[in-house]
Amino acid sequence: MTYPTESRYSRQSRFAPLGLDGQRRIGAASVAIVGCGALGTVQAEILVRAGVGRLRIIDRDFVEWSNLQRQFLFEESDAAEGLPKAVAAARRLSRVNSEVAVEPLVADLTPANIDDLFEGVGLIVDGTDNFEARFLINDYAVSSGIPWIYAAAVGSYGLKLAIVPRRTACLRCVYPEPPSGIQPTCETEGVLAPVTAAIAALAAGDALKLLALGPEGVAARLTTVDVWTGEVRQTSPPARDPDCPCCVQRDFVHLTGQRRAPISLCGRNAVQIHERFRPVDLADLARRLGPLATVRANDFAVRASIDPYELTVFPDGRAIIKGTTDPAIARSLYARYVGM
Ligand SMILES: [Zn+2]
Image (cartoon, rainbow, N blue to C red; front, side):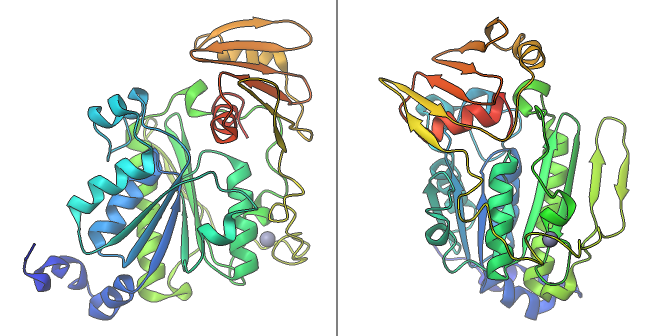
């Protein structure tokens, strides 16, 4: 295909703070987006249209009908085919900008594969939906000196924070441990497309600024947005924790896998997740899952049938997911319905 290359990015490079130099740096950059859902699809589309050199899209899920309300790159045919999100996104993005090398990777980010998945990447953008992945990304980013952008949304509310190792607080300065208890998830609380799009756009803005101007270019402010109340807030930069186990003590427990909930196949067509460090309130979980699944609960477990799967969750956080032998699917279901 031929087209006038010069004019393609002219509206962006004409923006003085970015300029032609910034555009060249964006074009030379390699970026990874982890999670290609409501946040990741918008982040990916903005970065591809902006002309980032190489974009790696890492996602473990398939397109479902319930994604189409907010995941901008996907179409009905993707859901009908059950395409992996990374593949469906890459197909669409290749039609948006064929100059960008988009690499779809259908994978569950783990301590074992993280070095391979992030090889050669200079910036990581968070499109995930769970803290387990974010703590893993944070450990990797801090240990490698690579900036990353934390982004999250649920309901009508979302937030983003750019994290630049050695310059800003890291995720563990802000959250020393993963939040305890059951976390609200998009499955249990719902989520509005305007907030995921807004947070993804803000995160992509930080990404372009980091790529064009370097680490000095980004103010590490925590930005929160609520599209229902209309409240938008910018907090002052979170303080670095002088005792942070990650960016000060450099004890990368998530990267070494010490904090990862081990997974095992248990019998036929079922996967067990041993989540030992976060007890679950079964009554609360049953109440949250009630509108979404056929739920049976007692003092010992909550069992939720979510066709074609059945989740059984125990008070210590352990769960058995029937209906799959794929640990990535089990982990995904656990993250969605129990929270991580
Ligand atoms: Zn830290």
